[in-house]
Structures are given as C-alpha cells and as structure tokens.
Length: 362
Image 1 (cartoon, rainbow, N blue to C red):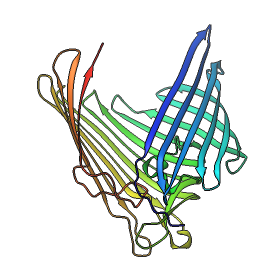
Image 2 (image 1 turned 60 degrees about the vertical axis):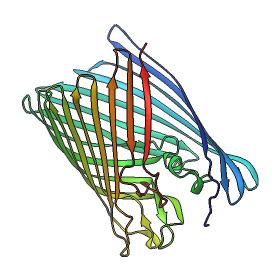
Image 3 (image 1 turned 90 degrees about the vertical axis):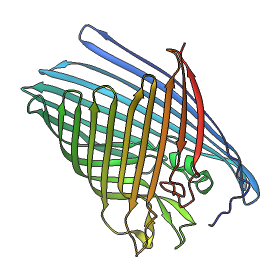
Image 4 (image 1 turned 120 degrees about the vertical axis):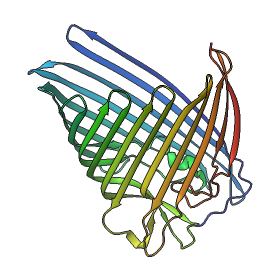
C-alpha cells in the first residue's frame, strides 16, 4: 500500500557490545566471540501516526583447529539471533529468526598452492528453508612474487545486518521481516598482481546462485511506491580492484563491479539493484599535517520495460589537519553533486552537507 510520510523527525539510538578471546595449547588453536547490537528508531510519523521500531542482534562464534593429515583441520560454530519489534496499527508486535551454522574444514599449503576444503551446514528457524548446505572450497596458486591465481566454489549466509535497507528509508519497511539471504553457490576465478606496496590489482569473475536475496521492487511508473521482496537470484559478475601508492604522500584506490541478473523480472517490477557499481578514493598530503581525501561513487541500473532508476553520483571531500600530535581538526563536504537517489529506495537522498569536527588522542 502507498504510504505518505510527513513531519519526519527520525531519532535513532544504536549500541554495540562485544567480546572476543583466542588462545593456543600445544598444537590446538581456539577462538571465541560474542556480540550484541541494539538499534531503536523513534519519532517516526506515518500517515499522521507516530510509530517506533527496534532491533536486537546476538552473534556467537567459536572454533578449534589442529594439525591433521599434513594439513590443518578445524570446525567452526556460528549462531545469529535476530529480533524486530515494531509499533503497528494494532499495537506492538515482533518477529525473530535464528540461524545456526556448523563449518568443518581442512586447509593445506604445498609448493606455492594454498587450498581449503570445507562445507557450511545451516539450520534456520522462521527464516525460509530450515536446512541449508553450501560448499566452502578455495584454491590459490602463487606463480611468483607478483602474480597469483585464485579459484573457488563458496557459499553461505548473506548477513543483512541491522536491516541496513531500513536504515536508509525506515518508513516503507517497518513491518517487513527482512531475513538473511543464502548463497547456495558462488563459483569464481581471479588473478591478482602486486608490486611491493606501490601497486595492487585484482580481477575476479564468476557466477552465483542465491535464495532469499533482498530486492526492492518499484510498484508504479513514478518509482514512488516500493515493496521489499526476497527472491532467488542468478548473477554473472565481474569485479576489478586497484590500489596505487605514490611514495608516502598520495594514494588512489578504485573498484568496479558489473552484475548481470539473469532470469525474468516477476510481474514486470524493476529490481532496484545496480548493474554497475564503482567507487573511487584518493588522498594526498598537501603539506605537513594537512591531508585531503576524495571519494566518489557511481551506480547505474538495468532497464526493465524501458525504465531504469536514475544514475547515482555521490561525491565527498574531506580535509584533515593535525595541529599537534594529539589534536586534529577535519572538515567534510558530502553529497556535493546533489539530487541523487538512494541505493535501493526511489526517495531523494540528502542534500549537500558540511561537517566540522575535532579529534583528540589520549
């Protein structure tokens, strides 16, 4: 249903608490980790009614490994528990889901080759298919001190974190349960090049098949009303990464990804996922203590039934000045190109903004 938003003064409160431990006894290594996140959104006015929603995420991970059969054998355990509470038209309610993952693996290195063979066994509650399984196999060959080849067939849980899409536009998805997706298979090959710390480049191409991947579909020609949907997805992709260092004064990094979503678009809806997604980052030291940074993002979308989302251009510039060893000041300009659209939503993004700040190191 179409929703109107007025007097939007959204307030958010986000907290995170975590603990990690690791150790070794004789030839046995182990680790343990636990974290808890809270996110509350309040003062959200929908159709004249004030609403609230909140989330809690609990993550637990532990694992152990030891030498076995000329390699290293291990087993990892991961668990995620998610709860969404919201104030709807009929009062408060909640939805939750749990995922438990068991991942046995065996790793070995010989003659310039690194290999890892494993499997992910997943049990999910209130989140689609109850039992899932995916491979975790990678092989890498270091040709010389500059070139390396990699290939693999991997998969596993697609962690949507704190309903990250709802963070962008919380009003169109407050009562939608966004569960984690699952990647049944990601088959890839890649090559990388490294020259000391001056040049790092890599190229990767592959095919992936997922279920419950998160999409937002537009429901009218004006891209005003939208709906969250989780569908299966088959994607051919290619990604290029590069990092150039110019002594210690300057750096340029960029990455480019192209995605070709296969199959039909159900009901003629336009899946708001970028066909091309590129990022550029640069930094340089203009004078002792003064550093400038620039970031730029470009996203372009596939056409469906003759329509496509507008191209997204996002430019930001930051200056950072170290007054002393402990005190520094910074200034940031964001959304400089203005009038952009959000990644998933058809709503206008923030206008250009300016921020001043200071950092003190104790």
